[in-house]
Image 1 (tube, rainbow, N blue to C red):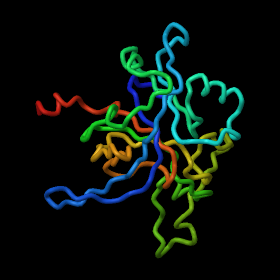
Image 2: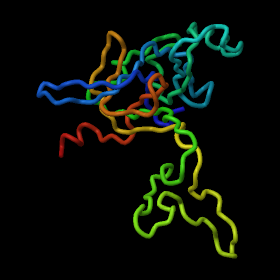
Image 3: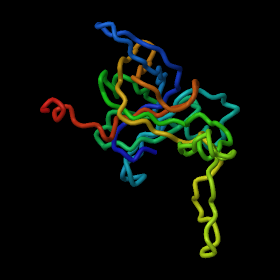
Image 4: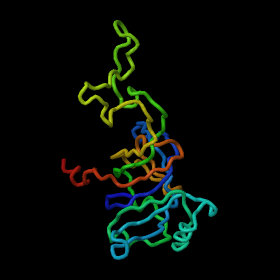
Length: 226
């Protein structure tokens, strides 16, 4: 659930491509499908203690939905989606939507706007200490005996005589929630409900992502004053 009071959209990463500006510059963009974002519930301060919009994306077979979730979606008259997420919003924003309504991309984002994209990074399995923690390896030439790409000693002295928890060592790399901040919306395809975001975003092709307005972006007025 988003802790910022701004509405975002759920989507699927389609892939990357490049577009050309009027000056002939090539711009790498990531295509994100944000079509058919449906409001499943509107939470209010009186009934839930906070104001939020619950949104679902994608489609799922009725046989794959639990009975409690099916009843919840039927109350809003919404088809079951693959993912459901809440966005904390203001009461004014919540009043502009109703359960069962579809949120269009152009109603939330604009070309040139800064956004934060959250997704699950690509899993890379079991990795060594050097690769997992971006450490620098030792020289692999003169005087080094088979220890150029190893973490080195991890032991402690007799006191405390143990390795403290949290020591950076080998282990699982990737497959974690990652947020890339302050990306630019380069273009919006309203016909196909696609967001073309400048740069790379977390996750592999076909992975689910969450796009929301950037929380660290400076106001437009402040940028123009510089």
